Length: 159
Picture 1: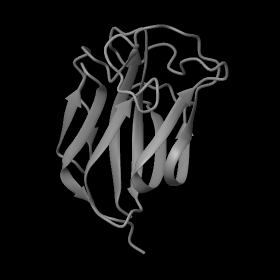
Picture 2 (picture 1 turned 90 degrees about the vertical axis):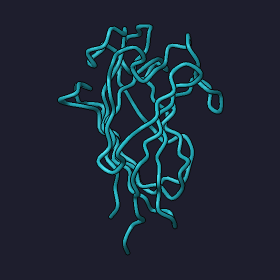
Picture 3 (picture 1 turned 90 degrees about the horizontal axis):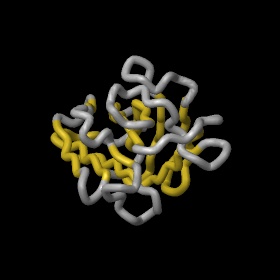
């Protein structure tokens, strides 16, 4: 199987209590999905997200039982109120190789997340992100909360 392992962080600027953090698939061609938010969410013990995708477009929803932010106490080492590290393992089950992979945070689906909405990939925290398949990434913080991993290729699932 051809998989990509990504290490990223989500931070928020406001604090809400965590009851039970959950991540679910909201839309997209996801063949299989699992999320483990029982981990500390630290760099040493990140939340785990595993997906097999049949398209490059899938939307995940992060929430708690009360419908608030699932991020709780900041375990990222940045100055934000809330935040968690996560490792995302994605398997390419599409018909074509991937030459990039994107992650984007949005409060309202389809609307870019700009400054002041409380979401970021640790904006201003000085953190870097990594992938075991892509050599580099592009980060856009001001007009949207966006990461694009590129500089490599992920083949399709071998059957």
